[in-house]
Image 1 (cartoon, one colour):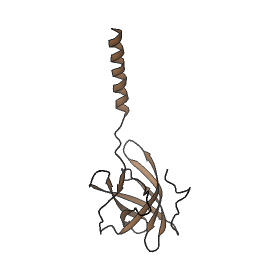
Image 2: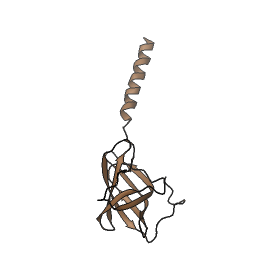
Image 3: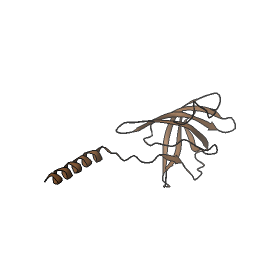
Image 4: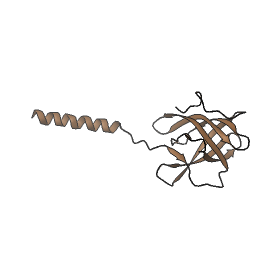
Length: 138
């Protein structure tokens, strides 16, 4: 009887604990197939996240690459987490939705070819960021 009470208590505890666990999908990465509708290249230097019951909220720093690169500070409420670009040659494809204020970025889930779009609100800086202690991904 003592064994069955302990087994039931363990089962009950495991059930309650399992209800608190929530599936968190892996973060998205840059889309791998070039898309001519997304001509901008954005190199994400750092990402910070907060989560509530419905959404992910992100912010960080990035560089908009091109002939005259500029730094960006951004916020994101796209509902999906995404990774920073660990390699210098990596970038996300993007396009302006509202020039120099809002952009839409392409990304895909790891192990999938399904593309997601994520909107970033940006503030442009005069110069690009240099990877260092203040921009190091956290």
